Length: 390
Image (cartoon, rainbow, N blue to C red; front, side, top):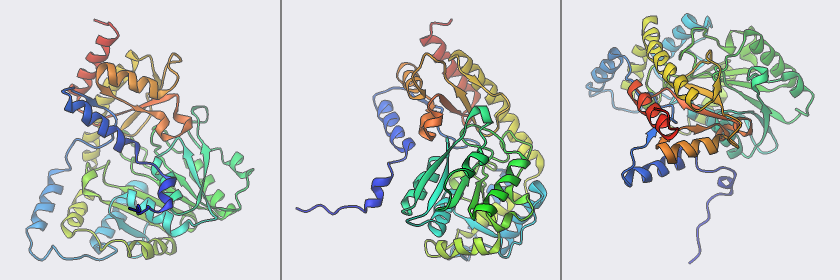
């Protein structure tokens, strides 16, 4: 019998690394192995009690279960605008410069589909979040890496990029605070990116979900004068408000660019569940102490990760931000995959190999802060045991 073939575009991408690795970990657990997963950045802490209460109260209203607007509640867009004004000092028109998203990851796909097509090129950071590459390729566009390095603070070399052929480049993915390295942008970089976009007619898209994690230097590319002409910014409540499973994100930028993305998005979904929107409004009203208390927990965990990395003879920047720790592996390992596999199979502790984020990450590993201190203590004990350290 003939086989129904999937679309050829699927040949351009692979199953997400974590999807396949979680299957392996599940198989190991099925054999009775107690595997500790320090790989995935899924917040293990809850949102604020007020956020959960707002969700519950709204969900009990029988009128709140219908289809919703494609552009979200006006009050939600106003809440996002107030959040940006308070913390990023960016003024956004809630009527046409903000688009709520069902998580910022869907926004990456919507932007890609709105601006990329066969014959165009997307600039993708290496190392960087793999979804930028996958979303770009699925549009039929080509992908061109721009390499980031520790020597340059994990910032792009725009002068070197300007010497390349950019005639077909339509879009550049940027992500600061950077995942996986935890590097921060500088105000000068954002100014240079906006100028770069204007000079070469390239849309600059900054993905900004790690703004509040172990970071008090809140920055937005939209703070640069004229940025809305050539830049969009994604943000999310997943990391900053412990709402990863709630899928609450946003897109901000100039009205024309936001409208173009809406044209695509409105054909893909029917808006967000109203109680989720009302809960997000409450979350965005969390006081500064909310972020301080959350970061106090992450700092304590980060100290434990540093202790674990010292056992592995890895080196790292203690000033990095975000909910991960990025570390260079010792020269005795061929790459991060080798170290990751050794720790997984000998100590039953999973650590993410840096190579999944691009070739520039091959000499690194990444550890998530999304586990309790006791879990890190158990991981440290296991590693000490396999290394013969009492």
